[in-house]
Length: 221
Length: 225
Image (cartoon, rainbow over all chains, first blue to last red; front, side, top):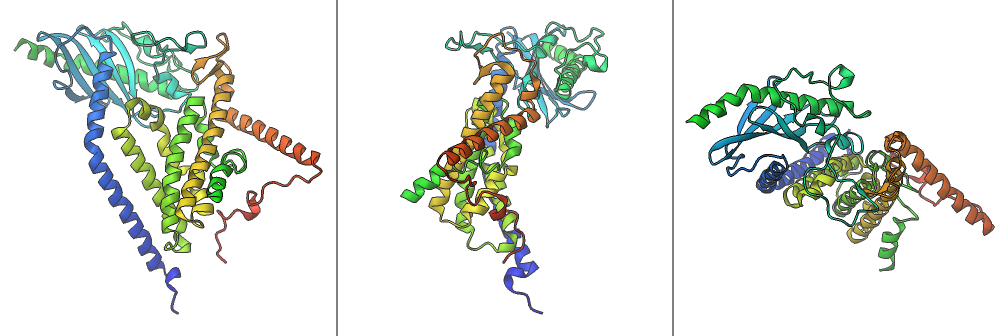
């Protein structure tokens, strides 16, 4: 029995394969030409976040002196020393936690030299808009009375992210949300996101405690 | 020219993808937690819809009937990924941060596939582009309306500007997907009620627009003639 072309499995399969091939080539091409601009954009974003971390004034390029390492739980942590006139002033850290509700959550945090948390902010997330994303966003609340005024300077408040401010990483803090028996508030409906952020900050603190010596030794040289 | 305009305008109200065709309910419920989110999702979908409608109307003649759906899906997915990468590279980071989370959702948006199947595969490229723009804008309109309504009910604000300052934020139902379902239902009921009443007043029977009920929809018809 002879099949017509439009019913022949091999012809149809071939057509699909060609379509997929064209699409893959297009994607490869676009991915190639956008790789550099995307990397540059990310770097620019990181630099912008650095400025928001309540860090003391610095004159080095923290991104260039970054140390990429693994936290005890295997998260990728990028530690950036913040220096003024060659003297270590503070640390900035970028942590990627895989424990988000949808994909990775990337947080940036600032630490003073003795391990006190200065500020925490979420730089990249794919959480549910309106629920999980509320835990991550720092936004100035506009009302009908002030919507024409420019936003005040400084970091807008966020009840979950602000809990960490001023905490000492070496203190015996239970790094869990209250629901799990820890010390941190969480947002109902976004427990997984809250948990992921608390976990990420805890991991960053632990990593910093382990790696801190490297920077101090470097500073002496 | 007149048909082009009709293609554009019908998507806004008469064949509005959310309020009449009831397509793409998943991203509608998921992303309309605020007016801004709804608007952003609508615009992103419009871009993809426009592009995919154009490409599909161009290739519709050579795609074998049996595998047209997978081919369309590949085209749409490619478009979404390309737009995602281009935006990541060249759009200002504030725009990407606002839109980025919604872009992968467009692949599973059945408006895009629905219009490819119901319109683009049967009409020329130019008309398909206009249909894409019209449908996209209709989608944006419905999403913005729904988002603004939900945002107002859940936090007393519209487009992130708080209108009623002491409004409670404890009304979690409307900001979650089930609440969106309920509100869409209420909007649909109101729309149907008024359409029916207008028809009865004119002494006519209320008939839903042709081609929009399940009988004549061609999306799920798997056996070919």
